[in-house]
Length: 447
Image (cartoon, rainbow, N blue to C red; front, side):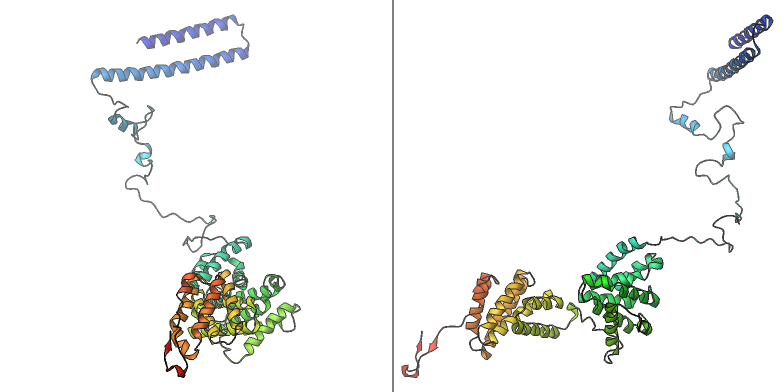
């Protein structure tokens, strides 16, 4: 009652002040309107204060009556804070949205949702009514294509699994640049070894019809024929190699047989003409025309042992005739059998024992020294090759009586040139120096 009386007194005082001003008539219309607006604002503020005081009196009366109030700082008070009922003092005290508006709530209990009708104006509208969701892979551009394909091909040269490459290519969106995979793979193999080119031919054959079509293959080889003037700068043998790739692809049915016929009389570049001529010659051979499996030779680890021994013997014989160390080194590298280099050491030492004169001995020491310095033959392979000769020396001496003395000379010379270790030199077997004297001595043995 005290608060209500004070508010009434204030309201009456304001109205009396306004009446006095109106009687005086000293205010302009603008000032009068402004003053009335201020009085209205004050009246509203006083009304709000009076309502808050009323609510305070109600809470005090509740507390006096003995009803407990929830402490907002107590655990029980938090339940009232999280309550969905309105706390502004307005409304009927019912939950918002009928209890269906909370976080993680799908709707009121018992609510049944109807089937949503498709909107024809929706950009994703499908007339069939079935919406299909799929992962969209962006198409690779020219720059990203080379960065993505090169590691795949390089790894394939290591493991040789064509199915893995096929799986990786299916995950990519090559788009209209799909044919460039073949050209990139062939370009990388031109800079590699013969085994890499063999793997590339197998890859193109396995991908044909699955990932790459005949038109993609033909387009790739057509592009490489046009790029031959640039490829020949890094790989002088590029025309011959590309011709072999084309012949192998035709034999593997990766590109049609009519591929060569399209270029007859239409090629102006000499390098492209040389590549096409090479392919035509290989395909015209009646022998193994159906599949040119040996166009790149057989990979090092896949060659038969007898074939490798024959190749190494031929290499050493050509070296003894020509004396060109670089050619011998190139031939040994092309065999790609570093685990079998001990056979070359063995064959070289046996040739020295079976030869006459010191020429072969000096040349073989020089050859082994170059192979040792360049790291082409490792210490383990060198030791295994000499040890094999040591073990077979008694049998070799049956055909070569002076094998022991020649072996000692050769081992000492190799040690002087730092080709073998001191331990390997000391393990060389020696024959006893005993000999028979003349018959006039009675057949005594001189020590």
